[in-house]
Length: 487
Ligand code: AMP
Ligand code: MG
Figure 1: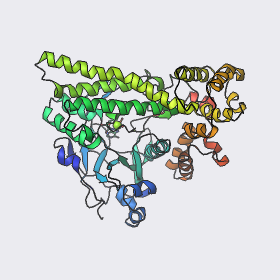
Figure 2: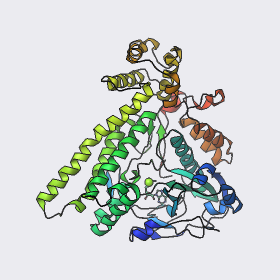
Figure 3: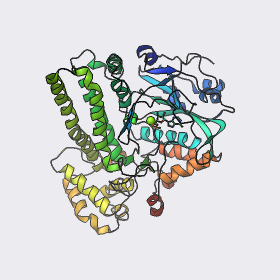
Figure 4: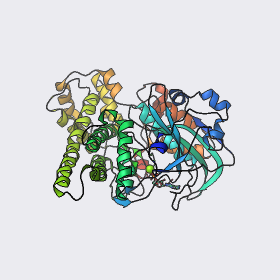
């Protein structure tokens, strides 16, 4: 198999951070999905990939000649408890591609077999969860939200054993990097400060090159990551996205969303919404995501502290703890500012005024009290801007409950319907549609997946034929909806 043009900076510059490993061969590769647009962006030719037998490549049977697969080590807090060694238990980084615009991208398998980090797991993945990564990643990308993306999914032709046998698959994932808070925790928890320092240098060179060589660079990195996460979580919140498993090993340094396991989009607006079957305490509930992001950033700060002060120098430790706390304490305000920026766009406000946050909060309180569908309600503001309030009122349990708020909104400014439609998506991955598509794909029918994917790539489109993708599921289905990870 010919070369992709891989570089291997991670393996080269961070000895001890990964293990060289090979994907497990699989019996019958079959290509389920190839992301032509993304391939082209990476400087790869999709037609050549197909001619070269993309199925065998993306199932891991015939690797590009310049791939040097590695399993990355990392640690992480999972549901608040620390595991000093997680690592790529079913993933392998093949290498990095520097795309034509100069951006370095990780190309990695998920579901490619056991590794030294697999612990009790089988290292495999099923078709459904890997196609879910495609659907949600492409939807997020189309919504303008930073995300890892799927380059390909190949069926393996072998079963994976979950509650029942399921057809197996390998995902090829593209990421700005797979550096995560848990990567730093891995070295910090082992007290390997030399490796930690190299990791910080590597990360800064890759994601924040302007910080290289600055005094207190780890602190500056903490600040940069906190800023990116504030912007990312605000974007999640403004589309009703619930990640479901915001463990520190699933929080990237790049600011991209990663790992679409038990995630879901909210339907009826409820800050307490939680779908993950294993999230009993609601730790990762919709409304708790900003708090959890801050908590994760505090764990990131802890991992960086040993680089900032000698543990024996108490005064120095106190000084840097205070500096790190300043960042952690600033996070809520950064997040609120990002949230409000997005809310202003979604409310159709061209400028900033004093009462805007209250206007947005009261709108959300209205949606909550009226059990309105989050996505549809925001979208209906565009109709309201054109004088048609019926679509919005039809979403409310008591249609007249919107009177006072609509009057305030109109008084605040005139609204441009086209701008509102560009800020408020019509189509998000509806849980029921995603489940239908994945169930059909598992049975061998890819048509619903392909149709849904096409719709998700046009989130702001008003085409009538996309209407089935804009509807929420019947309330009784949403009430019982659960998502599962460890898939
Ligand atoms: P995740 O919840 O998918 O972010 O994964 C958490 C940890 O569990 C990571 O170290 C994964 O590599 C590992 N893991 C998840 N599923 C499997 C599996 N089927 N086999 C081996 N390791 C797994
Ligand atoms: Mg993960």
